[in-house]
Length: 289
Image 1 (cartoon, one colour):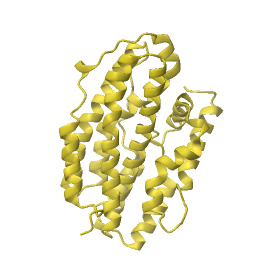
Image 2: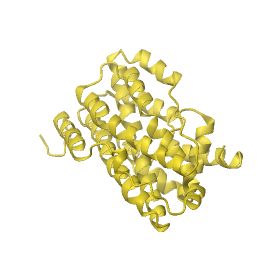
Image 3: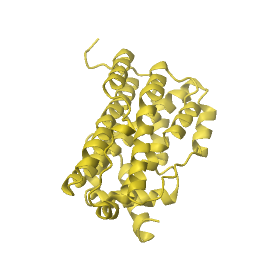
Image 4: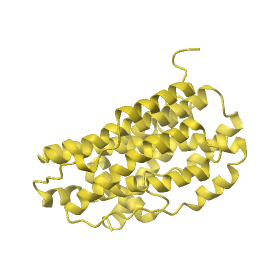
């Protein structure tokens, strides 16, 4: 077997390494010293609020997985139960504590499962539909984690420039170290499905159609308010001035796997459209609510 073919064993070994090398970040390890809280709050308060909420929604994400993947594989269960969920919930708790230190309200994670998830879950007991749901789950996870990596890297740089070393060294850096491993899991899992021809041409066609009308940015959850909030996050991190480069970063994997027949496609158009919609919503309402 060629070395670049991704097997379930390779994925499982990756998840094992993630768990061993990156235990959940303990609250007691965090130095919450903030030199200029007013400056941090004004510049990054909205970003921290959004990230904290998204990370704290991990428990809902697990419930959605149980709906979408009734016949979940053992390696998927190993990842989300033993590695991903314990790490992500700590990210949310730590960021929420920082919010409180800055005088901001506690995060309010959305715990309601979307109706679209329930509908797809009702069909997911059909094996052919479950394979499509698995691919969409992996692609969504990859896009989400890539957005997280970019957000934390940019936030880290901004806090360094402000001289907030405690937040950089004990909050953002430990969190951002764990996100690339999550992205790698989703990337490997999605790629493996394609490499092993798990989905037939009609399933891939349906996956492309479903992805085209259901794609959403991290944390939006089908809510217009969150769509505008995400636009505010992009503005706060300075990502609004480089939307095509951002779309390429978060849409490259699905361009390669779902849209391989379209040569030269760097990202699906629906990714860039989602970014534009988010910024438009943010600007139309005059900022964050």
